[in-house]
Length: 300
Ligand SMILES: *[C@@H]1O[C@H](CO)[C@@H](O)[C@H](O)[C@H]1NC(C)=O
Image 1 (cartoon, rainbow, N blue to C red):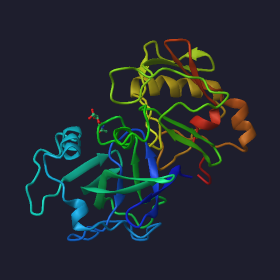
Image 2 (cartoon, protein in one colour; image 1 turned 90 degrees about the vertical axis):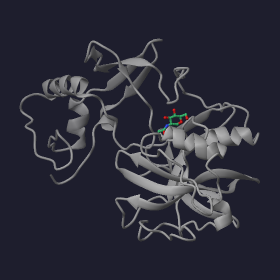
Image 3 (cartoon, rainbow, N blue to C red; image 1 turned 180 degrees about the vertical axis):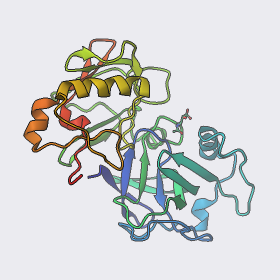
Image 4 (cartoon, protein in one colour; image 1 turned 135 degrees about the horizontal axis):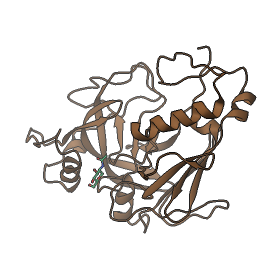
């Protein structure tokens, strides 16, 4: 399963599926560049690739968004090439691949409104995929090129706030701007003066017992499938899990994940595995039931 939003982009507006990513700034679509084509794009995409005109891609190096993007990506993108016509190239590295593209300005429709915003025309993605559940990424990071700061600049919203509430069986809400009111929500303040979403130091507890005596600094990244914790915390956590489920459950091999156990039924898993919680400074806790920290694979 995959969380994505549908957005209408371009002129005329066409629908695209976008991955929701709080861990990156630039929104981009797989794209048929008018001169370069779609060099490495998904072979069987959900929608025909976005295909801008050259005029959409005419972005000078000193353009505000080009400049901000190149600063965000400093390292991999040292110089803006003054190619003709002017285009703003970028290369983004994710944990699971890279995307090369140029900045495009085009219409994004939100409700009744359409606004021209800066986003990426990604004409080369590595590794190249056969199919993908999405056509691109919705960058919800706080950087200048982020989608929400651009909406603010267009006065479509007045506050740089995002909210998401994702159902475990699909569906849910995504909101931009002014606070939305939903019941049953625990609010934890995000750390200030940081450019990524983090509630600050947290301690990790398994079934109420602290796993590691120091705190962890967690970053909320909706674009990653897995949650990563450093080995110094992960290893004692696994020891506690082994303790918790008892020695009668032997580990089996899995090609992708370091620890894997085989069980007869989900009920047995629910009985043996206790909840995890992340406890923040201000006594606010995020509870993670066992079924949400375990990954269910069949037939190993
Ligand atoms: C997002 O933008 C901010 C501010 O420009 C920057 O500090 C941060 O590193 C960017 N994040 C990514 C993943 O590029």
